[in-house]
Length: 379
Image (tube, rainbow, N blue to C red):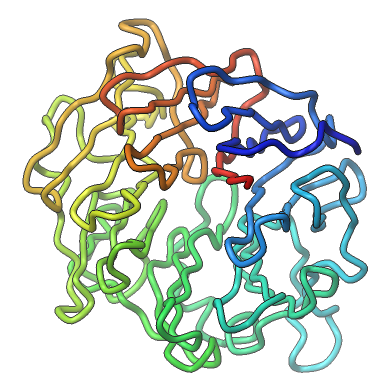
């Protein structure tokens, strides 16, 4: 599916319920142009750029009646090729078969810098797949997909299904990995995914009789901070948390947000160079969980001191009657000197900031429900 030729600067890769969109912001990021949709009508769960090979993009999609698959591009999205062997669970034969059917390829994660051509895919239901040939063929990660512990870890069936949504690889050690699972918790591997252990001390499962269980928590999003791989953040069903890996305990930092807002939401986005700075986008998580902006007044919140204090950032956003939220993969930041921050809403708008969230501008509107937003850099 052709698009216009690559242009330098910043673009946004936007995955929606009805196709993939590209927003071109150029070098200045002052004016933005929305290009025609690709894969129109298909669910685009996630599109990501490979920092090791910027022309390479990977897309997790559900293409109509054909089910979930992966598409890859080697020319910044000008053309796409479907994987010859996309992710799929083993058929229900023999003792090692899972008997599960793949519902979505939910997140695409580039591999370690020492492993060119390696990509990881996180799925619904719980699953991790790896490609070692640039996304053409995929194989399940046996130590995770066939683990007998998966059923034990899961504490229930979350809305939308059991998401494997936050896979992180330590840039210092390709064998060191983290993953977050909806209604299961955070898990860590130090041997390339062969074995996994819970990493949930300090985080709450507030919906269970015992909120301090070793697993069964509901992380909505988790990140390894790019400025310090030992600093982790988590936005969960039960608050916002920070961990310094040497301590190994999650500390709830969202309680410093206003009580009228709360610390429940989906995304958490890091500043590219400051480990104490992250953005979140709270939603109304009270009573029946409307999953909209609290009181219809949307705002991002930023901390610049690791969660000790938070500042509301709503200049340029609707002042009232804006009942949307921002999903876990639908918020991102670029790496410019003054970092740009971007988010897509469940009502189809894309907002961006050139000044680290101080002011916002609507970059696109009337799109389908937005599932993911990622920054694409073009030379």
